[in-house]
Image 1: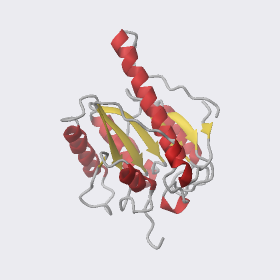
Image 2 (image 1 turned 90 degrees about the vertical axis):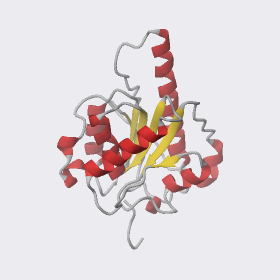
Image 3 (image 1 turned 120 degrees about the horizontal axis):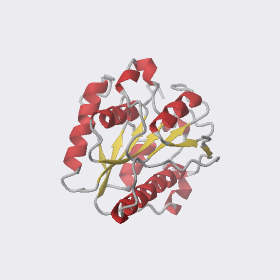
Image 4 (image 1 turned 30 degrees about the vertical axis):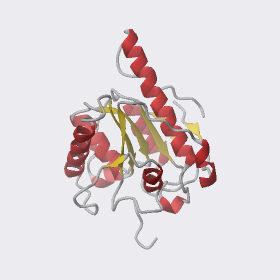
Amino acid sequence: MEPRGGQAGSGGRAAEVRLKVPKGLQILTVPGLHGSGPGHWQSRWEQRFPDWQRVEQHDWSRPSLPLWAERVSESVMRAQRVAQRGVILVAHSFGCLAALRQAALDPEGIAGALLVAPADPDKFGVAGLLPAHRLAFPTILVASRNDPWMLQRTAFSWGTLWGSELHDAGMLGHINADSGLDQWPEGLALLDTLIQRIEAEGSAGLSGDRAGPWEAGVEVSSTFPYI
């Protein structure tokens, strides 16, 4: 499979993305180590969409995958009280690993996931705790060509294993606040694509056409950093 290519967009174009979250779905952001600061695209998205929720960790500086996944689980269950169709996880860096660990333990309630610049599982010694199969829900994995935290080809190898749609973000580093993305309209467009995938799968399920796991339609296509 070949990834789709993409370029970074300016914050001024963010308003062009008309993102609508269907009724019954809830967006949960899952930041990486040290959380996402005010300049991070996750924080900017939360400001723009105040009904979104953030998965909060007890200790943002301690990369404990079991503990972080537990917090994802708690947030998913809490969100399901008002979002019967489940949650869409918008994860970054180590937050991606926490989201994926929860998916390995119990994918119930997860409708889809946008995985942006996942941290390298081998650097944290947690590769064996992640799914080793195609996930049962749609995912889009976004990786840049110069991410210092994981080589793009390694990220795409993992994404292929999970059945993710792969997106080449170009030269954006770790796709964080230091990348100068402002509201990152390209990312919002990818999230909109993911929502459409979820809606299409739901329609197929209602019509009785769903035969199994979803199939990815991949086209060629600071002083203390927040990571």
